[in-house]
Image (tube, rainbow, N blue to C red; front, side):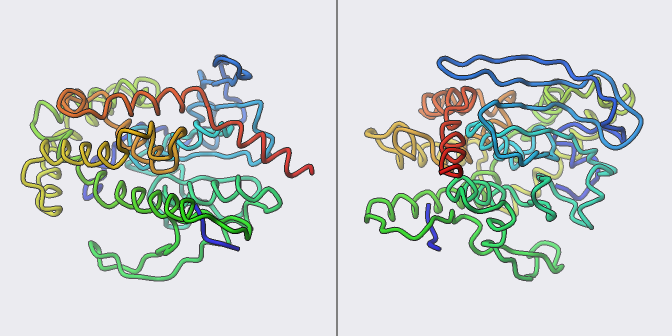
Length: 360
């Protein structure tokens, strides 16, 4: 096998929406079909009634081209950049999956994770162990696409963990040293393919280790921006369905105040002098790396680095920082192109190809 291609306060974790412990069995779902040019329709089903047990499904995405039988379920906060990364990947490749919004205070929906308190988490009927860490999730599922004869559990086994000490908490934690690698069957790769894989890994790491750290200092830069950001969370997170009114007000105003203060600590921790300028410079660096001869970092199609950065940026599209970023940098055309590719599920052909190879 070859190696190939916040929070200190509970309310501060409100980067998405939350639903209390409610059940799945009697959820009523409303279908919406989406038809992209020359593609089969996929359906998005929205829950309109809360049942009594289990968890409330926020929505379910169904793609007819997904014959994997994985029955993926994503536990998330809607506007968490790490969760947005995973959704960008799932949507681009056309996976069918369910979405569960996690209550950022109680986190009751992820009690099954045995003490693991972060999102995103993905579960599958084909794998006893939940998938954790956004980049690891993407790599495992990418490997699953590459290796049609391998099960999801076998693909996860390619990513061993080891115990390490968290720099912030000084507590033991698991690390996955090869989480940016995608496994392929033994074959001879050209120098260009090797370079492309290395470039993809390096930029995926850059998104996690640098770009995402710029988001909070920018979207919570001032009190007004912090409040506007949480009001946007309220809108896109469907809080009016998932929270009673008093909890929504608490989340918006207390959350905005908490994150306004925490963003200053994050700015200092990551040695950011001018948050806006740092954001603009990061975008300029990305665009320069793509160059004038490529549409995406992946060439004619988005690769995993494209999807990672797109997902991270997509987490703050309703904020003032996003508007200024588009005005002050040239990242807009790239972002729009990836958005089209993701929304049209242009990578669904790889799901179809996997199904065909598995039958062969």
